[in-house]
Image (cartoon, rainbow, N blue to C red):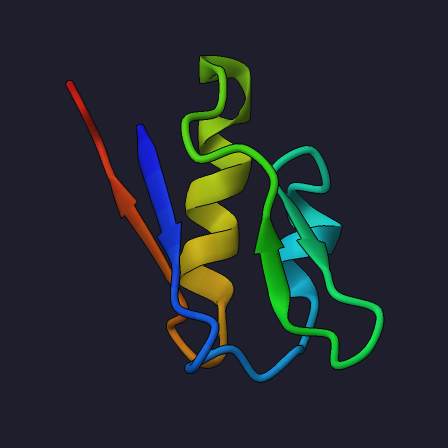
Length: 66
């Protein structure tokens, strides 16, 4: 799995951080998403998919390598 985020689309809702805090964080100054792990372990894949599908601004893109 490979993840990318589009900071320009991010609205700072923070749902990704709640769902997958090992993978996503938010900048303190504006709450824009920060990607902590572009290729997370398999144990995080379900949470990352949920975070991407629940992102209100569609700022998270997930590509499965399988």
